Length: 156
Image (tube, rainbow, N blue to C red):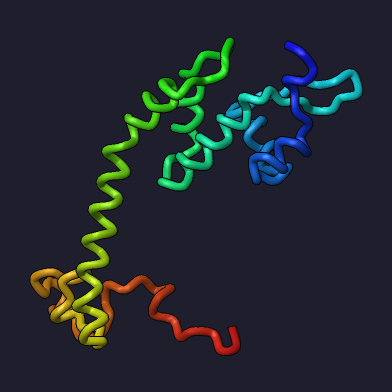
């Protein structure tokens, strides 16, 4: 491998948009690898940029680092991953992404009724209390998480 095929951590930061700390963390976690110069400076193969783009895409749809690591471990170490490699990996997550899209659409559609009445009624809320099952617990937002029941901090 020629030295022109290697990038410094600063070049990777600039091109990938990840901060130095993330690169060091991903290296410790085994998601990317670096070589060291005789002076101990990190050098990365250009293919690390593709791996980092994949990490960013996977993380943006909620894929955990363990699963990302497992997927990246299935890639060939001796060559830069190809479009076919990425397609194979992303195909396995397509169903999950479709489920997330469906859930967000259902959430959006369910919120229309709640926002429309503005009452946050546990009696009529199709989203949090279908079939009015919480009514026996009394009035108010019984199912709403405690963090959402607090009064908003003033001045923030």
